[in-house]
Length: 512
Image 1 (tube, rainbow, N blue to C red):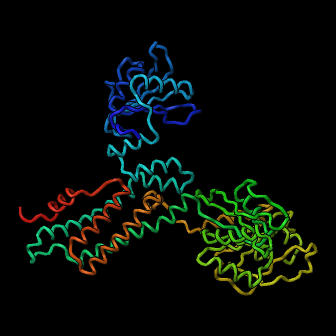
Image 2: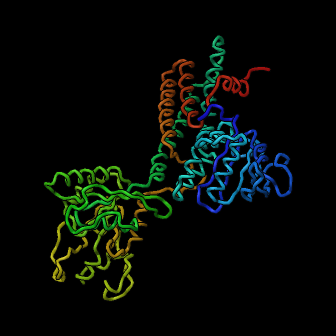
Image 3: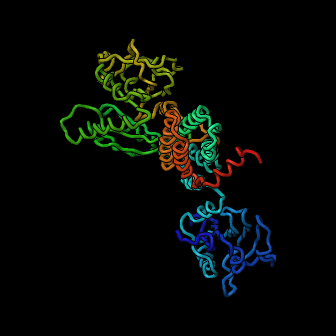
């Protein structure tokens, strides 16, 4: 970035090329004067005489007085503009030639081409927003779903900044009390900083910082996609399910065991929230070194996932159940019975009570009737049983009298036919435990903010330790300053000695 950010007048295209309308933005102390050199209003009046927040119709003309385009000019007067400076925006037709000509004329008349992000940086430098709000502008532009949009809007409106201001004020209060006590250290009978009250205040600050830190897990998942691992044995239909969920042929599907040897990831939206689905290598005993590496990565992805979709097409053994349970501790596991279309076709004895919510289709179900309800977590016998009605030898599932309490939910689908996929999506959404986010909720999404909060928490813990140990006020005050600096890094501000001094005189001044 150039050093003379707030002295030069800058210009740039504010909209992507190729649209019906293109907006050229000019900002700086000479913005209106330079705009008057190339813009001729139909009314004949100069933009220099226009009020702020007004629109004017006219033409962009070159030095030969040739018309480049009919445009609308928006005039903004400092400080009531995005950057806090005088600004003009030209709404032109979207021709690339026209937009380049307008920019060329502005540069000829004294503008400089803006650097990436310079408009928002000027807004920050001119006090229109703090650093966290400036970062929210980029998040808002990059938002791809409802959840990330709400979080970016919340941060842009200053909700996160306001929370930090409250923390900052509490820390400043503690610092002021301690430093006031130091100023009157020769009067031992005076005590301004009650250690018990300071400790309670430090604990409250610690709790709030911890709450913000914990929100990062949710914010980061929503921003990058909530990770969902699709796991199971080979050939149970994991890749077919991934393709069905993504609505495209993303993974190779084959009847050959071990086709998927590495993880495949992609994102899709469910109810306006991004989910990152991970198709993993099929779990089985194998001598193939490459396939074994893929299976190891499957277990790694289970560790990273928020939700685990465990796909089966036969009844898992007790050993398989225990192995999956041990790998999924702390995870919400959805047991997905796949290939139910095969089971229904070849086994009239297939338990209909397991098909709650299943969309009956005439080519798969002989008798159309409303599917009866069934109890959640209907479990399976640990070993397969023969079925005299199963002429094709297709695997058939049987309900078990036992229950596996670690299973979060259970869904019956046909990934190949697309049966009951909407119910599976609903189960995945519910299992992700996504909070109902509003614009007023404060959720940390930025890794820089998260890092600063972690350091601030370490600092406030040291403050509590110092208070417990009854250390001198100057040592406690030093730790408080470090904590304040960490929080100030998020918004781009710093606590100065004058602020502490002003706070002392405002709240704790003795006498007149």
